[in-house]
Amino acid sequence: MIASGPQGMAAKALSPEIAELVSYGDDNLVLAQRLGEWISNAPELEIDIALGNIALDHLGVARALYTYAGEVEGEGRTEDDFAMRRTEREFRNVLLVEQPNGDFAHTIVRQFFFDVYSQILWSGLADGDDNTGAGIAGRAVKEAAYHFEFSSSWLIRLGDGTEESHRRAQAAVDALWRFTAEIASDEWLARVSSVFETAGLAIPDDPYQRVGGRDGYHTEHLGFLLAEMQWMDRAYPGLEW
Amino acid sequence: MDGSGIPGAGMVSVATDVRAVVASVVDPEIPVLTIEDLGILRDVAETQDGVTVTITPTYSGCPAMRQIEADIAAALRRAGFSDFEIIVQQSPAWTTDWMGEEARRKLAEFGIAPPTDEVVCPRCQADHPRLVARFGSTACKALMVCSSCGEPFDHFKQY
Image 1 (tube, chains in turn purple, red):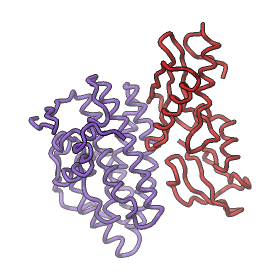
Image 2 (cartoon, chains in turn red, orange):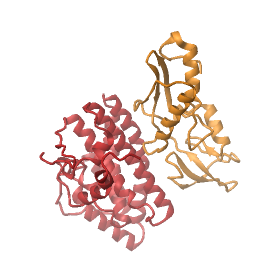
Image 3 (tube, helix red, strand yellow):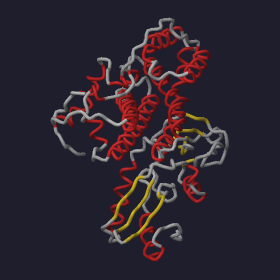
Image 4 (cartoon, chains in turn blue, brown):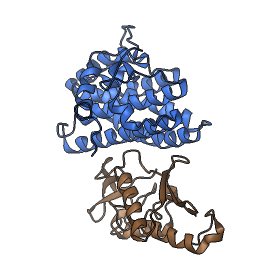
């Protein structure tokens, strides 16, 4: 890691434990930022409020994970250091969450894939030996289930709706499937397939998959997202609310 | 508020006062409920180094937590306590099961259906209300409408 921050701080190599906390924090922060782009632009008011609420949940999870990672590291790094003062190559989020919102179908498919992953991830960690981690996961797993109710029911409505909504939902699945290898497991595939069956959607035949997010190799979209999210803190170092 | 479970039992009378000060802080969005009613307040301890307040965050997306921390600090300062620390404890995870009967009654009187699987209208007590929006005005609430009296109302989500 040779990347260097604007204040000249060299990027840190993280211990596996901290790296894991930070990578899940990155997933949630990046997805929160993406969902926030919908605010005032969603198809209807209820969806606008729902997407904003879901974004806040993801942001809250990211803040808790970064704060905890900073405590474990013990070098005084805060949630803002992780969120605002790391470069693109230091982010460890999966590629799926940084993909652009696209149309509503793209946003719902992205959310649905991630909600299934989150439910499996957090239910595993909620029973873990790490007390604080289990506490964060214990809350997040309930929220993931609540988000899943929203995303899966919309996916079914779109897939099993009009010809146009079905076409768009399938197009979103076809476009985003290549980013699922980083989050997929047997359980994930079983849950996704079950909803797909109800929604009348098909898993694409094309086996191509893009990976690398967990190693800091991102698609071109993340840099632009971070530039927008971090510019204030970069322009005015140490700025506080 | 009997002060039980508070470390430093030799200072129980003082600790009880401190606990009363902290426990009287209300939720900024639902001012009929105190942080004790909501189960956010886990512990208040007084030692020679000062007061330690332990709270547990509710929903990850709740922006009120920061305000609650500031309100606890302000209440302690008003009561003359200057040395204190507020610890945010993540585990065990907060649940609406920590909300007592009294808190649920106050919530219903305020017009918000308390957290439960079997929601009833807080105005006319009719059951089987219709869910209007899964995501409501704050992170903790969903919007419902009564199928009997037709009034819309908030439901405090069960977590």
